[in-house]
Image 1 (cartoon, rainbow, N blue to C red):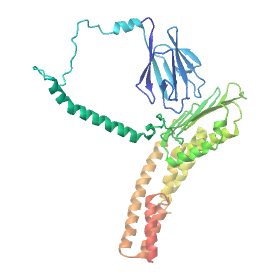
Image 2: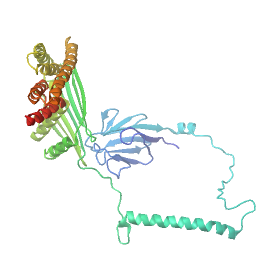
Image 3: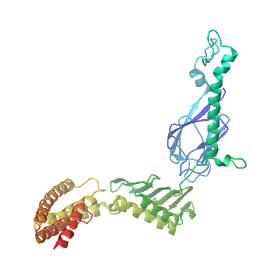
Length: 436
């Protein structure tokens, strides 16, 4: 009772809510099942870090892990821990709880010195008049038979379920199965100088969620995007990573900034199955394999999340939006000249909105763009319904030439082949032309 006791409480991560008393001199934490605290987390090393009690004090040591050990947000090699310290390892956060002897004594429940009678469990085999020995045996015999039958069934089921336990067979240990196609990606790019900080981070979780966060202080642009990926896309990414040579790269490539007070850094962590590797490149030319994979990931995320506009300056984006708006206004003014102009007008208004997605504050005409899109789509839907009615009427009257002409107008009105309305018009037109 002369020393403090220590408990680690998992506040975030796969084992959230679990508590681990540190009652040994050494406690290991990692991905391996041999660790005292074993967490199935692809970002953890097999043996990630170690907790040690020295002279009643708790110390934490990082065991050269791939993704570092943080205490209160700071990476450490070794550090003494105190009450309420927060430890971050992989996707998990653990809180240190100390319990000094005086606190334990104060919180301990008062001992009840009153003598307690022995507790007897009555199974119903005796009564006030106590059954004779023969009667007890008669009562117990069917129970013994039932228990014996249950034991025989359990043993038989065990042999069937685990054939390696037969005579001459070796005992097998339970194993944690890790899918070699599981993929976790964490990518971060930072470009900073005395005037601006640009940060782009990308995360792909094993559950297939893709997240991108972009912060551009000078341009006052802050983008947050996310999307659930198709499993086939993830399979293609796995193939790309496997052939990239990423896992053969050194953990760190560092140079010197060509411009004083500036930083240009890329950091990429990939976990695939049981393989985990982190590579950081700072202020130097990137290794070819790193650059190729990094650019592939950036292009992939821009295509999937629609964040291409972030590569342009704010002024450039505003100019592009003005040009797109001018085209949209011109097309809208000529919606009676050509059947497809209304659709093209809506498309250009949406393009202008796309350019302004990462621009803050938004220009005065931004609300007008949104309003014009809504008006245009309502007008297009009304025109589509009217034109579709004309085509269906001609089909019902078996006026095939008229029906074909009306359907061609409908197809021109909705030129987007991915639009279900376009697909329906084409299907009807093929049927009508076959009749002609």
